[in-house]
Length: 330
Image (cartoon, rainbow, N blue to C red):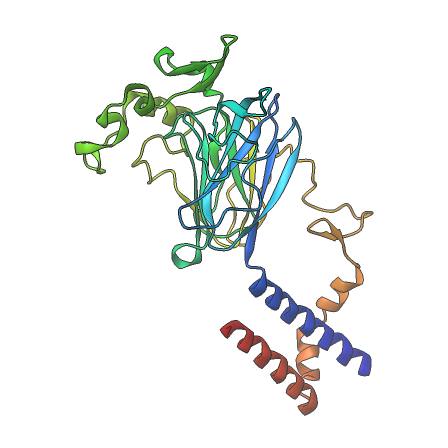
């Protein structure tokens, strides 16, 4: 009986500890993966009034990945810079997506169009994360955003997995010194006309309509923003998700929707198995876990309920629960 009491109390402790940790570390992780055939230099910009992240720019070699912890209520954008070089004076510049800082870190600089953008507002209305992949500022790289472990009716992958540089109309093309197609401008950037920029008399959803150019983007990438008022089919929401951002995903990469039960979403060619092999140790977030913990946490609820009916045990539970509730208030 004493052993059963210990097991049940430990199970309760694990549950309450998890709640404490969740309350303290209410944040998300963003993992960026480079599957391009070239080096890229991701850039990060926080929205106005929001503190910058621990890094605002870094290098990702082909095949590399990097995970960043992002605080709750963060908002901002990610993009990939390409064809970057550093001159003899140490000035760092990129052919596409350059942020104007002259350094590897963008330090508050925005992406110079054209650039494919992944935009996020975490913990927004009703506690939901809002995110999208935008081609409004043009396109330079394929990009896919996959929620990991989130929930919600509209918690699903979005992005543009098509190489638009090759299909870009000649009047929108951006070429490198060697003549290769490295980016595709938006019509706004190319022509600077209000009707393409949703500016002036066109600065509202009734007058700003998709152009033949934005429709080309939309046909190729149906879930991505193609012009300023393309909200209806291009904004996605999740609760409690982490995010995988893949540059140059393969065209057949899985874009399965997240279920309300919070199943992780991963590209089909992701190297991590979704289910552990029976001969491998169990893991949580990549850390080894003692298998016996599952036996403790799966103790019969009816048995523990019986044990917890003891006045002494019930008093201990009341203290733990009250402590947790007080923690939630501060």
